[in-house]
Image (cartoon, one colour):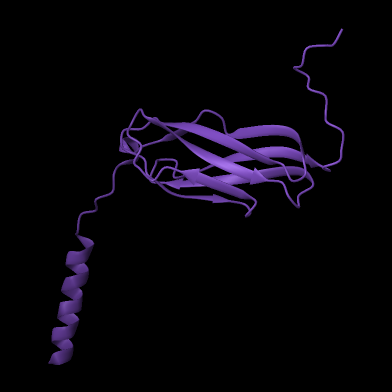
Amino acid sequence: MKKIALLTGLFLAIVFGSNAQTTETPAENLGEIEFEKISQEFGDIKQGQVVNATFKFKNKGKSPVILSNVQTTCGCTVPQWTRDPIAPGKTAEINATFNSSGKMGQQNKVITVFSNAKNSQTQVSIVCNVVPADAPAAPNPTAAPKN
């Protein structure tokens, strides 16, 4: 008798549980992150140099966006981001600092952004080429020529 009552209770829990309504927001009503740029290129930097990148983005969606986490590919890159919701139409930014100590050659540091947006996982990156600290400075192509 106890088995029948237990099985009946389990059956009713399954039936009523499967009919519960979900509270998911339809995709067309979610926030959406749109970055101004997805890569910050620094060219040649000297080993040990620290560079900072700012990735600005706008919420192009219909609901507030909340960044739940921002992860980097290694400990040499440290991100900072807002914990406040970004309202539709508003902008925010992610700042990332790359320390080239102990690095050499071409570097592509990927920063992964996790959020409640339609595009819930997006990536931006810092790109540079780390040269020895005693290497001569690369010419600046935007500098005015000397006469």
